[in-house]
Length: 509
Image (cartoon, rainbow, N blue to C red; front, side, top):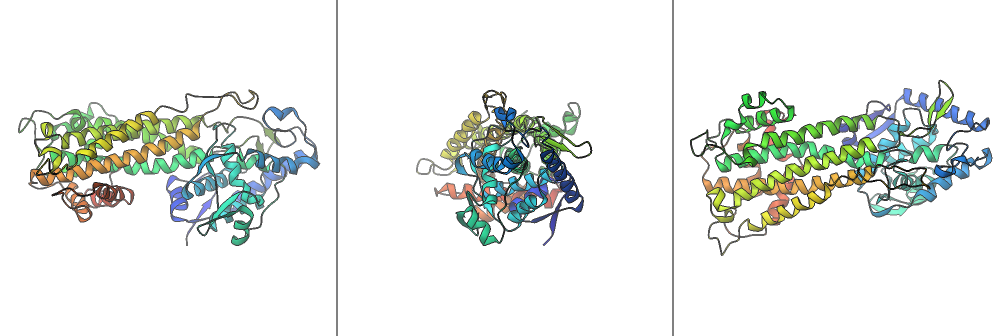
């Protein structure tokens, strides 16, 4: 099995996905090991000389003015972990936990945190042997890092807490024992090095981001199918229209839609059936494109964060300094994930409007709710209800978390990011949006059948065929949630994207 080499500087979003979802193994580079050892020597120097450095020879937060002796330093780090592990809510999914561990390893591998090499290797062993700490999803303010959830990550390393191993939830020490990983004793600076950072929000948000990139592609496929179903007017996709307003996402979307619809005998030109389409079709490049530009911005920010030092204090071996700063503050990620949530909400919002036009006979010219013998059959009537519900929920979830702050630690930590809440919301919005887009795809295929296709486009034809292999045309009422599940699975597993890209090339943006 290939391994991902951890340098602290080169981790990509795609590599995170390989570790989180495909269980690819990792190992430290020799350069990273050297940096870790040098950083550790500086921490030992501070302790030996009783140099006043936050979190090494002092307490934490409001207790930063309390001096800690060399003899007390080990107990200080253990106490830090056990008192900070106060998370709430259901546990994070395994893929998120793996992302948390991976990102923390990459952070420590940069050699600015002072953790021992043996401690970091313990985390690598946990990742490679699939020991996954039980980490509650709530309880982080997102400044001073993700303190509470990261403390839960550390508990099994010291023989406490709980962890999942081979599908079983076990006491942390037992899980480590079964996996053959010795538990450790934390020493000076290590507890702080393990929990002071943004790795929880970044893990949650990075996975949501990766899914958002694929969902944006699926959204383009959905609108292309709706163009087929509505006899959409393709003049609005003309590259000249978009060249005079050259936002990249907008231009990319128009280009992709034309590629998907190339050769279609269902689409029309201005004046053939109507002069122009409703905004949900005609403005899809502008709306989808703006969301894509937001997604690309978030991707840039996330990849910076994944390879950054978010610890405190930061150890600088060259000058024998430990500088207390604020790199643990999650504001860059908080704003990014709020932005991601808003962008995804809009993809669902416009998709639901296209779905409504498909099922509404006054707008589509098709049988009401896309079914023959209406009255006896309800067809896709309630599909639109469900989509509307999800879109409405997204409007609530899209309210930014990053504009809130509640002071903590006796007002020493008087502004916090709420970035982990922002990341969790973005993930929920993504899941809702994916469901709505699956519904549009399902309804568009039904509308194409009812209208009588004259010949689908280069990209829409293989997508339609892929869907119809799993979801047949609805001729009389049946449980539709099963059909929606199948359409959503084809988004999740990339089936419809692969079908399109095999015909038109990569739908990059």
